[in-house]
Image (cartoon, rainbow, N blue to C red):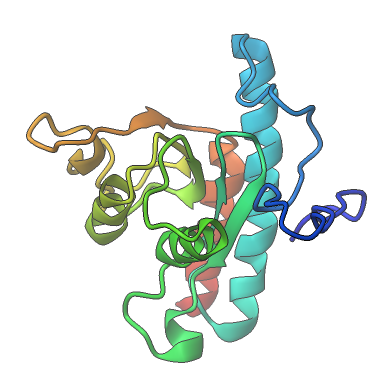
Length: 189
């Protein structure tokens, strides 16, 4: 979910292509920020949006994982949450759905310069999709020591054999992200 104070992009005039996506609360041309402190603040804010999206998965009995894709200009291009139970699709992971929506927003499968933000380290399928979509950067919350494919169990996104490698920023709001998933599984027992 996008904060209430974020207005959607205005419609361009006839014949004038406008930027795709939804403006987020930073100035044009400042994404990602230059300083480490400013980047940390932006990653924290974006992870908050992904955490909010993850909570929507609880209503359908899906594992609460949320994801979003931000374009190179800092605009929100796609949102996703786990929906495997809701729609009966084994590929309906938060990351895949966010990547699909971002591609539809841009009109291209190439998400070069984009940042994927996700509350849990992606699995092998999602790490592969992230790499194949040419995503520049992955910002993740909690690490997944059982099935993580971005540094924990495997490291698909940074494997030197891949033609495209993804920058990984891990551990952003990791306690909150991990607690949300732990609490979900505790209620399932």
